[in-house]
Image 1 (cartoon, rainbow over the protein chains, first blue to last red):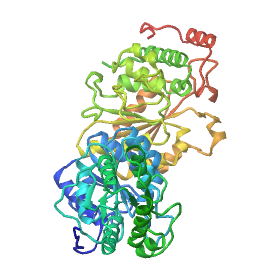
Image 2: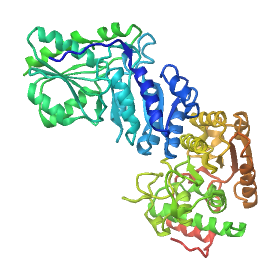
Image 3: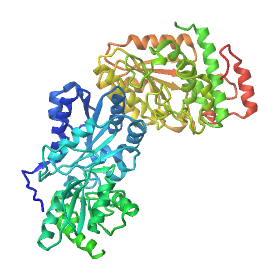
Image 4: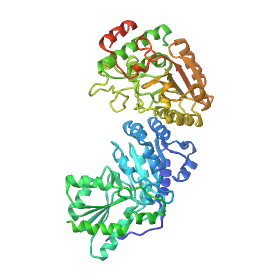
Length: 317
Length: 283
């Protein structure tokens, strides 16, 4: 089994900030907008380097999305950044009309996604954003797993011509992927090969899946871990191939069941390779205040819960 | 070559004929606001905008841009695009039909020249217009961005978000217009919401406000002249065009009932008779 090393904990939002700066240097058409969350979105470096291309919108997310669409019409590549709930649920119609139906090259930079936003509680924690964004025709949905991958995903989003939803988080988490690995939109990444069960994970749950696989190995279970960094378009071929190989599947995500990665993968498998699937997610709940790790444990979205789910999936073979 | 007021009057009469014939053929659409905005939009498209319809591209480089925030006003919008040469006038007959480029609300997905942005979900077009205006500023382009809002539409909070944004970013290349006809689907605007005095509101938001008679070509021309002269001031302009829903046809004028209703065949005949034929001819 391939071993991954945490090279030092970092937040994925800082990966976005670093990627945005690089994208801005590579292409003068890249601009960044925020609704009074420049610091939280780690846009400071971009704003300092390109003051004219940093656009403060105030606490007015709906207008921010529309203004971004207008900038895109003139050929700019706008990244609009706020907390995940406020750049999805709050502005769903604006994204639908102005960005997706309107065919504008806007990138939705979605920070503090999921329950690991932590202490601010349920008003600010969204466990529904993937569902909302997946539902939009033509929207690309990216959910990188660590700092390095978020840097690369941000650069890939800037290079891609069309709407992108880029989801990342607040807490410092292990940084373990190859910093030089370019991000390929639409490609699932096999982190570990295994014969007994496949764990499809996305975002913060990829590290948890690797921890679970390590624990399972000690018990003689060979788990395949697949990083679904692109939730849409889903890498159907890779999903089916892995499910055919192992015959049992677990899907882990920091999101609720409805409309999330679990349902997306179930949909692919139903058509291509019916396989027992177990789900590790927030089910059908709102979050609450707490530390990120305490919340992940309490909501059952951590390594021990993933390991437990693999056994259930294997038992159903 | 600028049109005279007499010529504009003839064109806007033809545009009103187009509006009514389009909605009657489609048996759906929004004639009321299309007719209240027909005169000042005719002046905009024929005399005020710097645009070359045959070379149109969506990025609007080197062109003035118009975004229709009140996206339901497609009858007047499509008529003007056709009459200024963006696409053949005959295509107006396809309005709202299966497979048409002339969707019920503007779409950028059907390849219809002249459409910069999809609209129809109210309150959003002004934001897009601010973005285009800011993009033109970043590109050091000298062109104007025009945007049409409805007075009923201004009940949307996002309009006022865009209002603050445009002032904060000094968008003096943005000329917004409101078709102040005082009517919306459910009744007179005053009876549906507490929108109040739009002039005072826009002034309070820091905009330069110009009020004009939306059916008087002299007043309309003066308003655009003042609006364009505002460039360099660092603040955006709102032209409030006082207008009448359904203007030009007696039984349609001044009532919300024609916001989204279509005349019966005998009413259409009556309306077209009232408007009279023009040398431009029907589509």
